[in-house]
Image 1 (tube, helix red, strand yellow):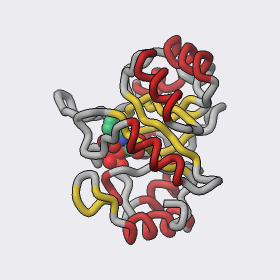
Image 2 (cartoon, protein in one colour):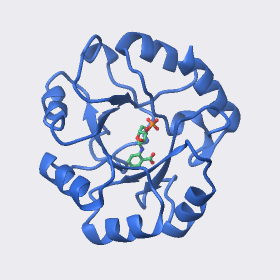
Image 3 (tube, helix red, strand yellow):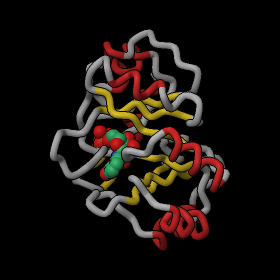
Image 4 (cartoon, protein in one colour):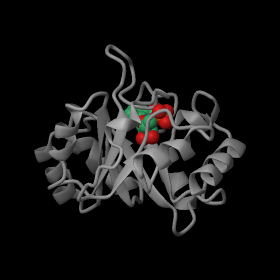
Length: 194
Ligand SMILES: O=C(O)c1ccccc1N[C@@H]1O[C@H](COP(=O)(O)O)[C@@H](O)[C@H]1O
């Protein structure tokens, strides 16, 4: 990841995900990560018991909350663990932007992702885009990252349309669910950097 030019790597703690890792695996990967590559733990509605174990065992730079965590819960997690928190918010229509704004006072970053399909198994990592025109030209008071169905083929267009300065990808750089393809990672980073 770092060799390809990525700034962050993510460890997914969601059992149903093809990308799910356990704490031991994440710890080993995190300890082997080069300096300068930010290590992010992706959790979904995690309770304190899990986050206690996670933060005790895995050296992390950031927590990504990808469930239905409220602004109050985001603030609580940030205070309890002393780590920057990125809150993921699903967008499908203009009315979803109000929910996104409610996290500005508490989150260090916002991950602007596509809304998952109703009844789907995964709250993210579905390879779905959303209508980027919904956020085109928006200026927000906290750093944000664009996600949702990004690929080496569409990331440049997504950046041009939304003005995103950071992008995140899961399934779009895989050769099979959960199996990253280094050539696709490299191609994604190259396309994103323009
Ligand atoms: O990747 C997962 O399996 C996952 C599981 C549970 C919550 C979030 C998950 N991934 C996040 O979703 C975005 C978008 O994924 P994709 O690029 O559309 O496949 C990804 O950036 C992860 O942050």
